[in-house]
Length: 79
Image 1: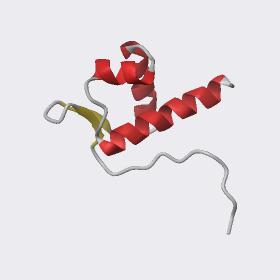
Image 2: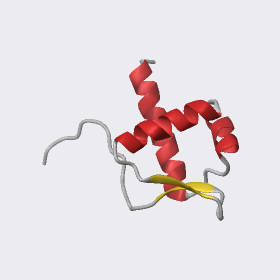
Image 3: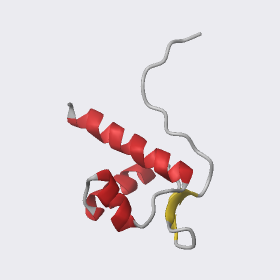
Image 4: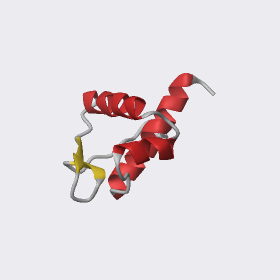
C-alpha cells in the first residue's frame, strides 16, 4: 500500500477515536494503533497543522477535539 494512503488511513483511525473520545492514554493509544508514542505525537502535530483542534483531556483520559470538526479526504461525485 502506498505510504500516503497508509498515513491517511492512520489519520482516519485517529480521527474516529478522537471523535468518540475513546483514545485512552497516549501510550495505550499508540499501542492500539501499532505505532510508537513518538509517531503518534508526530501525526497529531501534522493534524494540528491542518487545523485539527486536538487536545488531551486528562479527566477522561482521551484526546478530544476542542471544537467540532470533521476529517474528509477523497474524491466525491458532484450532484
